[in-house]
Amino acid sequence: MARILTLTLNPALDLTLRLDSLQPGAVNRGQALVSHAAGKGLNVAQVLADLGHRVTVGGFLGSANAAPFEALFHRRGFLDAFVRVPGETRSNIKLSEHSGRITDINGPGPLVEAEHREALLERLEQIVAGHDAVVVAGSLPQGVEPDWFALLLRRLKACGVPLVLDSSGAALRAGLAVAPWLVKPNEEELAEALGVASTELLTAALHLRAQGVEHVLLSRGAAGVSWFGPDIALEARPPKVEVVSTVGAGDSLLAATLHGLLEGWPAERTLRQATAIAAQAVTQLGFGIHDREQLARLEAGVTVTSLA
Ligand SMILES: Nc1ncnc2c1ncn2[C@@H]1O[C@H](COP(=O)(O)OP(=O)(O)OP(=O)(O)O)[C@@H](O)[C@H]1O
Ligand SMILES: [Mg+2]
Image (cartoon, rainbow, N blue to C red; front, side, top):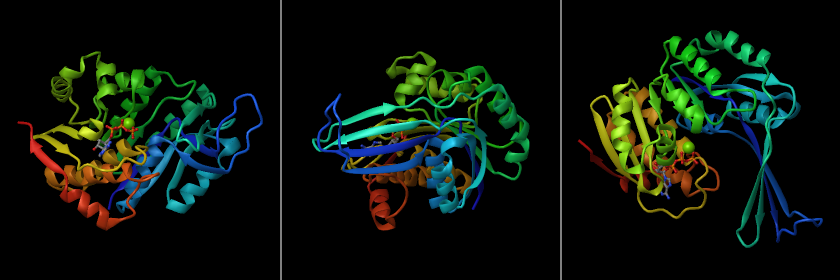
């Protein structure tokens, strides 16, 4: 069991409202409302907790609607290192109609001012102390620029703890320049961040390794994963599964790969289990490890091959 810190700079409250059919401009009556505290780093944290690790969660959290997040931290036994900022954490509203159509309305997050950015940097060393790895995942809130994000990552790296990054766009580009220990882009994210064609991605991954990124975990949706690391060049293909929701698939893959690495497992075993846990996430509305028998069946269906 390890102690892991996950940082989510831009968490979100996911609100799913089920309704018969959406009538824009009219009064609509919802049938059921489900809300849950979300954000990439918090998703990773939950899968790590399922795998038996002790987790600290941090980042920026709006103080006006912190209760559902605090309830999640309490339920999952997470240590809370979030810096509170004035205002509300963003809400991402999903209007889910009977027909299966889903309309997403993503709210703006709070503005993270200089004093709160400073507050996180000031407390950083103290927060990181005693952890075996740090995961930074998700997008940047208003007020956090890629340059500051790169500074945060450099500070984390300077703490001497393995740094894991999962982000996209300008944040991923700025983060790759810091050479984290492990990165988990999907194909589209890596192609965009490096400005390369999708046919060049394996070469680009090797190039990142040459620049000091120890592990590149390139996720390719239903086609699986390519993993490049020290003496590691592997590809995994998941078994065919019925897709219920892909929410949290990438986060599950990341958490489970980190698990195997921290446990010191052989790479093949790590990748096989991580690919199965990601496939299991796809078969559920949420994610996480709830059915160990299903997981064992999925693991048996994963094909791992060498890319060397
Ligand atoms: N349809 C699927 N069937 C089986 N496994 C899947 C499927 N979709 C995704 N996965 C698994 O989940 C992993 C991560 O998925 P993907 O590459 O879509 O990540 P992502 O785009 O980062 O997702 P996220 O939305 O969670 O950030 C894949 O590498 C694969 O192992
Ligand atoms: Mg992702």
